[in-house]
Amino acid sequence: MHDERLSARLGLWLGIAFTVCFLTGLLSHLVQHPPSWFWYPTRPVALYRITQGVHVLAGIAAIPLLLAKLYTVYPKLFTWPPVRSVLHAAERASLLVLIGSAFFELVTGLLNIAHWYPWGFFFPATHYAIAWVAVGSIVVHVGAKLPIIRRGLAAPLDGAGADDGYDGMSEELVGSDAASETGTGAGARTPSRRAFLRATGLASFVAVLATAGATVPWLRRVSVLAVRDGDGPQGVPINKTAESAGVIEAANDPAWQLTVSGPGGEVTFSLADLQTMEQHTAELPIACVEGWSALGQWTGVRVRDVVARVGAPPDADVRFESLQSGGLYRSSVLPARHVRDELSLVAVALYGQPLDIQHGFPARLITASRPGVLQTKWLSRITVLS
Ligand SMILES: Nc1nc2c(c(=O)[nH]1)N[C@H]1C(S)=C(S)[C@@H](COP(=O)(O)O)O[C@H]1N2
Ligand SMILES: [Mo]
Image (cartoon, rainbow, N blue to C red; front, side):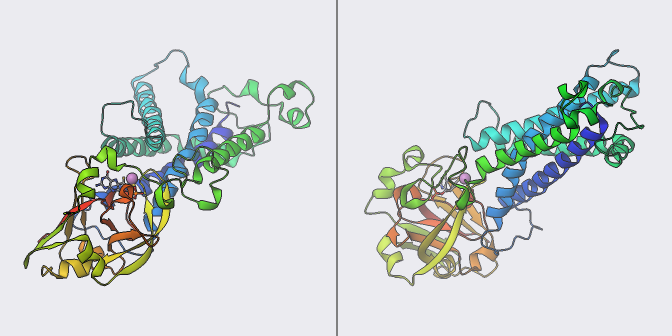
């Protein structure tokens, strides 16, 4: 089992999973903290739903892969003497960084989707920073091991292999594969490499299936581990409740007003004002960074119609603020492209009913292709930025 043919194949799969995680994660970071050069489209409507679903599922798939890969190489980690030369020491230190950062990313990601934060740091910033460490050490690792990886991938999985150059470790472990395939002889005690790979792939597949229901509706019934499963008022899950946001009183206040300010001055809207403006309906998903997502049929006023009342120029970004007095997600900035989008709504209804307080009553922002964390609930103020 501790053979370069196995670990090279597992490494390849793991490399693919981590690359997918890194690219989708980078995109998620850029959407939430857009630099001035960043260009993010408004279509497809489900863009973020897909990229973030893929991010979380690729991370889930990587967990069994990483464990299996470590199993195939662990005797190498305990070779004696632990350090043979300066170069050897450097290589071992880089392995430590690689294993540490890879584990860190998978474990923190997993705990984040489970809403369990047994740590003192801010998850998104740390998860993002360590992602660079992980990717950097993967690049170094692949570069350093390229000859072994090539040889491992080229060698057939089942053969005894004349190429066993695995630091002299694999000699005692090969040679029994033929016997193990038929289940006879001494080799029957160890499963074949092929079986080990298959079992690892199966473990990843089952892990993905068990969580994918959080974002793929028809998988809901098999996804026992899906954290958000479609339950919630009006058929849409919630993350931050009105109680924990401390907005119940302010949101239910009949004197609630939405204050909109821009270059043309300040205008206030009551809920009735919003309801008597031209209404539009859009099917848009809430797509949480945690990977769960749910479609809703939202009705309300177009953002562009609202900000037109205060003379917003077409290239202006717009800030949305919540009644919530604290919390990281009490406000968001909508880039100009999305402000102009006909699907960007100040929503006052979900599936034809007034918003449940959990979904942002009296009014919330809902837009296409963006993360749930930017779909600000319980709106109180809209500001045209220039
Ligand atoms: N004011 C406010 N709006 C918020 C949040 C919040 O904490 N405060 N959470 C966001 C997050 S993380 C998500 S995923 C969506 C969820 O919307 P829903 O509860 O209607 O499904 O609301 C967003 N809007
Ligand atoms: Mo979220």
